[in-house]
Image 1: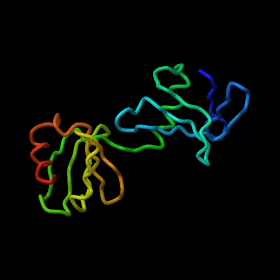
Image 2 (image 1 turned 90 degrees about the vertical axis):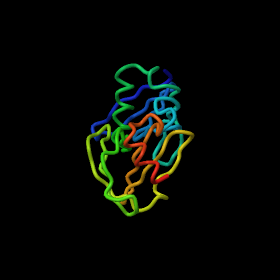
Image 3 (image 1 turned 90 degrees about the horizontal axis):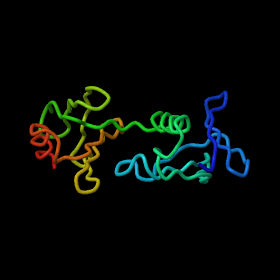
Image 4 (image 1 turned 60 degrees about the horizontal axis):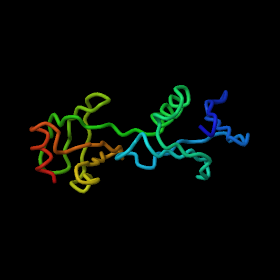
Length: 153
């Protein structure tokens, strides 16, 4: 690893480069947040300048990996829909009740245009508050969820 990573007393990440240069307030940014969330992570300053690159989280020592993971989790909120429990209507706007990797929730789908395809099998569903929910693989989701999705796609 070509850098050291710590957290300062204000809770900000501090990156010390191999040449000794210290960068306070660095942020991890995923290059491919959906297709490869644990690979290709750029450590950037608040102005967007990259100061370090991480090929894979798994390659980092435990403490550094945990710091990067915690920072990413705190900045990114994209629950993954595991199952669609119910929808109030097949016409929009409608309320969806879903089971996610972060628990069950309800949200309002304003229109079909708020469901976007990402790649061949993934979908992003945006609620009325701008929160994006991920369906990682629409072909492996349970039969009832797939039936509901088909009505909107």
